[in-house]
Length: 353
Picture 1 (cartoon, one colour):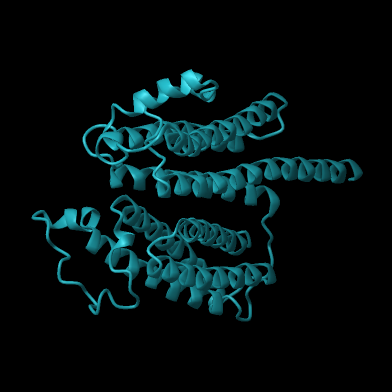
Picture 2 (cartoon, helix red, strand yellow; picture 1 turned 90 degrees about the horizontal axis):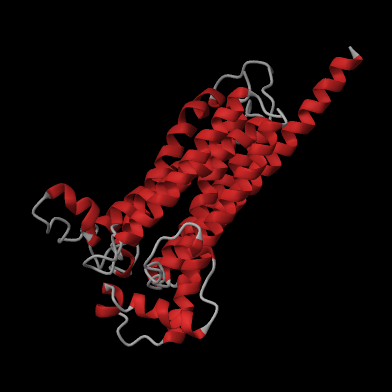
C-alpha cells in the first residue's frame, strides 16, 4: 500500500513536470501569435523573400550582407509597387520583425522536440501521450510550411498575402495551441468521480464546446478582416456609416467570394460573429455561476466573461481608431485568451464523471 502511494505521488510529479513543459510551449505559442500579428500590422511579413529553414537562422551581420538582402527585396512586388522609396535602414526595421517571428517559430520547435525525445527515451510518458505529442509535432512542421506558403502568395503579383492562406495559418496555430492546452490540462487535472450534477451543469457541458467553435470561427473571420484590410473601412460603431447593413456587400459576381474577399461583407461578418461571441460568452459566464457548478469551473467561467467584455471594448476602439498597432495586437491576444479560457472551462466540466 505504501509502495502504491509512492508510485502515485511519483506519477503525479512526472505529469506535473510534463504539464509545465507543455504550458510553457502554450505560452510561447501565444507570444508567437501576437508577434505574427505585429509582423503583419507593421507590413513586415514580406521582407524576407526566401525560406531557409536552417541557414535562415543567421541574420545579416555586415553592411554587405544587408545590401544583398535589400537587393533581393527590391526584386519583388512589395518594393516595386508599395515601398519603392524605402531606405535600407527602414528595410532593416521590417526585416527584424519577420526574422524574429521566424526564429521564435524555430525556438518553439526545439523547446517542444528536445524534451519530447527526452521523455520518450526515459519512458516517462505513456503510449497515448506519446502519440498526441507526435501528432502535435507533425502539425508544427505543417505550420512552418504553411507560413512560407502564405508569404509566397505575396511575392508573386500583388504585394499582399492571400486571406485564405492567412486564415489557414492562424487557424492551424490555434488548433496546435488548443491541442497542447487540452493535453496539459489533462495531466494536471485528474478526473474526479463526484456526485452527478444536473441542471445548468449539463447544459454548460453541451454549450461550451459549441462556444469554442464559435470563438474559433470569429477569430477566422478576424483573419479575413486582416487579410483584406477591412478594418480600415467603416470606422464607426455600432452602425456602418449610418447603415445596419451597408449597400455594397455583394459587389463580386461570384456570391460566395464576397464572404471572403469583399472587405465590406468581411467586416460585417466579423461584427456579427463577434456580437454572437460576446452575447453567448456573457450568458455562459452568468450561467456558470449557478448552483451545482464546481467552484473551479465557476472561477474560470467568470474569467471568461471578463475577458469577453474587455475584448468587446478593445475591438470597438480598434475599429474607431482605424486599427492602431498596439490595440490591434491586444485585440488578437485577447481573442486567444478567450479561446484558452473556454478550453479550460470545458476541461473543468468534462473532467468530472
